[in-house]
Image (cartoon, rainbow, N blue to C red; front, side, top):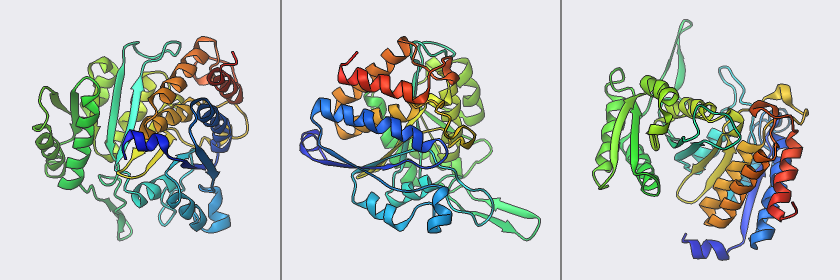
Length: 347
């Protein structure tokens, strides 16, 4: 869909508050989205649905049929954090279900230094592009008798080339530097296929810097020299771990946002979990989800709306509207209200 058509349409956004701290974060973010829509004349219907751990007892699933139908009728979804049960036979993550349902193959997780939030350096600007449909998160996880278990890392050429092309297209708009992360010295077959497939795609792109690193080395380099990286592309598990690390490198996991993107649908969410011990305390950081909304407007084709959210977040930090995890004392709701007023031009 081209930008001109996007800017004329009426959007339908599904909002899934989730559980734990999810509902209070989404309660803060929805008014910010509405303020942006009002400012830029964006036509959008926002419909909330139920999903997450709390739904299992009521509906027998963390993603009820009614919610699935809502998602299918929407253009995209913004999702709060949700608790995923552990143990054999338990529910698959609601996020994983949505990713597979809509083939949201690219998980995009930026990590960028922001003035007023203490990170390792003030010049970090990288994006981790995580293959979202296979790898060690393929879900092929089983017992072998009573005393052994196995998990399979599934890597296909199709998915590897597809995520590689996504990474190169993203890098084309940035610093034209792509780093392929793998563990090919140990996982000699599967990770060789991942690396070789992405390198094959890279041959189509001229004027790019293309390098690679083992995942354990990358965990080190993200701490030692994070400013040297632009777009990092990798498989599912590695991307999940490294993106949490990169969020901490720029200030904290509460600031981490992500987009799950497919060819026709997208889901936007923070990278952090549901933190049930903080439920109802109004003290968690809403910036990860607010910045995920910023990414939503980028995907929709509204760069001015995207920039407005980022500018409002920067101003809120400068004015001291920070939660405890990034060195402040403000409540989640206070941060949200300030950013909304900034967007509305009431400050």
